[in-house]
Length: 450
Image 1 (tube, rainbow, N blue to C red):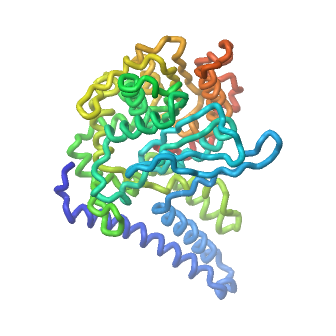
Image 2: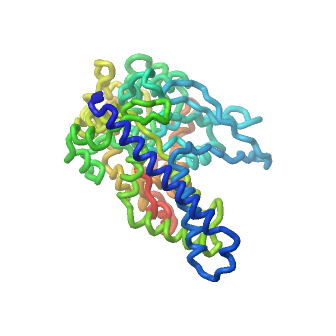
Image 3: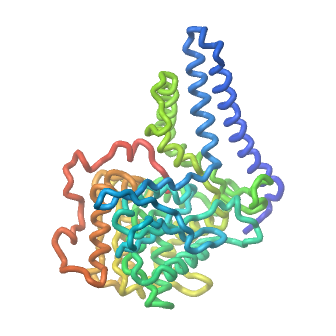
C-alpha cells in the first residue's frame, strides 16, 4: 500500500475528527445555553428549538466514535423464564474476533450458526436484530470486526485474502455442523472460504452456506455501487478515499478508508430522506414528544456509529471483487493459490435477494448457484423476497416474517437427521404473505449501505 500522503494524510484525518468534535461541542453548547432556566420566562419558541437542535446534534456526532453495545435482550424459554445472554469471545485476532452469544442456563441448541458480518463501515452490531431473532432457535456466533483506527501498524495488513483466511479459521474452529450465514459484502469471501476448506480440509466444511444480498457477480445487475466502482480508477479511489489515521488513535499512521468519509457517502445516497428524518426529530424534541428509545434514536444510534476499514481491504475489494470479478469468474486466489469454487460439493447453498435491493440488486447473489457446479441441484435453493430492500432481507419485517423461517427450514434439511422433504420447505420464489405484509416502510425510508 502506498504511503505517499505522509503527514498531509494524517492532517486530513485529524481535520475530519476536529469537525466532528466541534459539531458535537456546538450541539452541547446550544443545548446547555437554550435550556437555561431564565429563558423559560421568555415565551418564544426559538429557545425550545435551539435546545432540541442541540440535543439532536450532540447525540448524533457523539455516536460517530462510539462502538454500540450488543444489548441483546433475555431469551424467554417455553416455560416463561428469562435467560440472560452473555457475549463471549471464542477466538481473538488482531483485526476481528469470533464471538458467541451464550444463553445462560440453556442447553446448547442443535442449530449452530455463524453470522458473517460485513466490514463496510458499520460495526457487527448492525446485525443485533438478526442475532436476537435467531437466538431462541440457534447457537449464534458472529464475526466481530475491529475498527482499523485502533489497530497498531505493527499488526500488519488486512486485505480480502486475510479476511478469507480469518473465515477459514473461524469455520474450522466451529466444526463441520456449522451453518454459515454471510450478509452482503462478505458473501463472495465466505464462498471462497468454503471452497478452500473443501480442498484443504473437507471434514471442516460447513453444513450449509446461506448468502444474503451479496455481490457474487456485481455485473449481473447494475446499481449505483457497481456504476461507481466501474467508472472510477483505482488511483482515483486511493487519492480520494484513503487517509492515514491521526495522532489520537492507536492505529496512528495506518492507511484507512475513514468511517466518517464512508458515513458521508451513505447519507449522500439518501440525503433528502435523512434530512427530513432529522428535521422531524428536532421538531418532535421541541414539542416534548421525543424519547430515548424512539424510532429515530434506535436507528441512528447504530447508523451513525461508523468504523474505519483498512485501505488494503477496501481497495482490494473494489479491484478484485467488483472490477476484476475474480469470484464471479472463479479466478480468486489466496496466497498465490487458486480457489476453485467447483470443489464445493457437500455444502448446501442458499441465496436470498430482495426485489427492491439497490445495493446488491437481484441477480448478483444468485450467481453463486451457477458457480457451485459441484453442488447437486437438490442442495441449492434461491429465494427472491418481494418488496424487500437491502436492509429488510436480514433485519426488517421481511426477514422476521418470511426469510428467517425459510433459512431455519433450510438449515434443518441439511442436518444429519433431516426429515423427508416437504413442499413448503422447497419454496423458491416470493413468499406467500399477503401484499400488505411484504413491505415495511421503515426498510426503505432509511437504508444502510452494507
